[in-house]
Length: 310
Image (cartoon, rainbow, N blue to C red; front, top):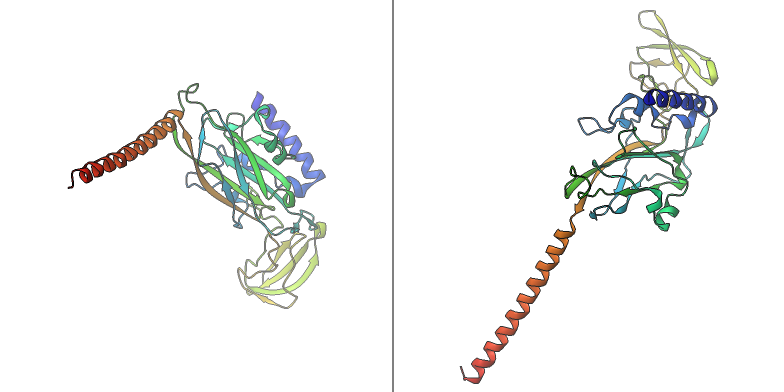
């Protein structure tokens, strides 16, 4: 019942957002959450790439090792040129937005706010975090956020404690990170958004270009066998062809207005045992003492040999 209510409320929120601000709503990870139980496929691909087809670099910074029950920062960097704008759902220019997903190992989760340091509070100001689902607190989502102010997104993470969770072991763990800027090129239904290029499906000659609905256009093409087809172009992309032009299958009819893209990267963190750290320190100290004793012993032997005239 709780999941049904959550789904209905999510649908209502998304529906209202699509009416009031459609260009922003498509940046939310709502579609992935409703269509994929896990955002990472068996191939390792994060499902955001199914709609955000363009590729761009995403970077991640995490500590090499962390202690148990410790708050640390995972930073996702989403670089792109400042002041970049993209086309919204209505074809107008809108600011580029960003979002990110961090898939943590089981047991790791978003740190509670009462354990955030002052630095973390300052670095995360204006950032809202959400879980991928009610039972997956180790998968954290952020976005959409204004891109110019959030090229680096800090995730405050709380490491688990093997003493209180028998399923957790000290050792090395993988973290999967995805970073997105801009709207997608395909909807989950398979339909193209207006943030991509459109091409001809058949060979033929363009007979007319007419105004379509909501600022779009309709390109009429007469095929080689005399059949008339229509290519519907939404508002946004710039039409590259003219009446009378001949086109081939796959030939672009518009430019590609997309300026964003999605990227993913894997990182590793070691959940370090204090006993291992103490053991390592003890080993270093023992080695250092042994080396000092060897040097002292060598000097003692040299003095004895010098006194005996050897």
